[in-house]
Length: 238
Image (cartoon, rainbow, N blue to C red):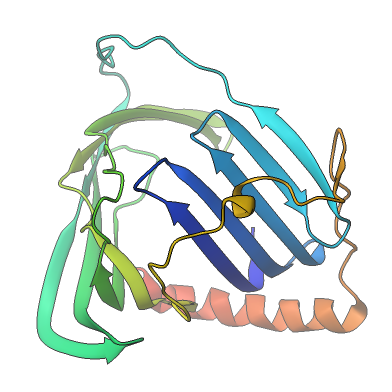
């Protein structure tokens, strides 16, 4: 899915609970502009909100019993993913805090005959350390994959070597995709952020955003062409 633009606010209560809230304004390639929010209450209940229509959907997340990890049997081909982080030695102040300049490389190495391609992605950006008490991420070391490609079933296992650095994006560039942190605060959050606002209607499904206008479609077609051209230089073949 392609986006012309996306502005996102993220609220996270990490000391007393694992509640979070996304607010997103975006222009999508297939549906036009939208304003939405998503709220999670300790991972048990998730609310999807349409801020323009003033409606929301309530979802109760299933719980699964805890048990020992199940080994994934080897089949098909193997794809190895590596995480490489290079600190350039540069620092810069953003929003009153010091960020480091990092280069993040992710080589993807495949076995002969694999239906996935070998490639390297490289991300250039400025990053803050993640705030204290952030919930740690349990990155997998192995995962299975399967999909249909060219009329054939492609499957195997992915092996992950290392993990991404524990950082918060300040400014980041990956080809034509750019991210920028515009505000950052550690002030206490109002509890009302984590429940649907009063006056919002609970519905079974949210309405689809309106389609793109002619001018928006023309703008997206041009942006899509630019992204396609830049992608030739973004991916470095091994």
